[in-house]
Length: 193
Image 1 (spheres, rainbow, N blue to C red):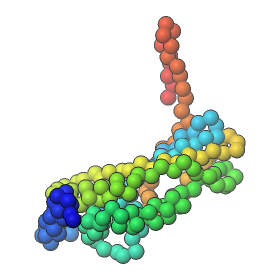
Image 2 (image 1 turned 120 degrees about the vertical axis):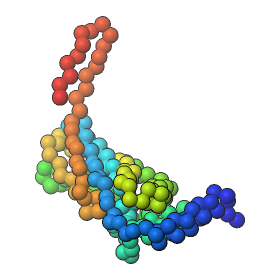
Image 3 (image 1 turned 90 degrees about the vertical axis):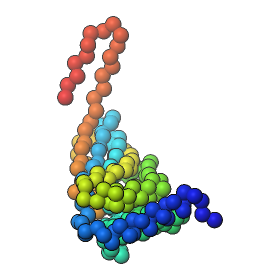
């Protein structure tokens, strides 16, 4: 038995299908993926990735179809079907991420935090609606965040980051934060950049 929300969504998808027939073909354009590496305490790294996971899934798809067809197929899947399709992609992407120290030794990434499959599918549904409603207008699809941590046995001065090719180009920002405490009754603190 379908809920009112599911019925409405299916009606919207049918409308989208009909509209796609009238839309001119347009090249799929990916936003730049981003990574941030933060070094704390000399040997602890935090990795944050801000990525187009919908685009990653599309580019890894074995069945090459136009992007709009991919969106339609994945937006209309049940949550269980989408999760079954998404989790192998997530596993493959996670295995591709490597941090190597100055001696080319891999650092073990742990405490992975990925968006739930429902969130990835929601972005696909949003992109489908944007492609339909605002065809021809520039749309900035959502970048979803993935986090992981790594520790090295000794202080780090250099690391190398490797990721799956579907995440490239990847804008990488790295830094070592410095902390200052502002205390009541004390003179202002100078902050250096």
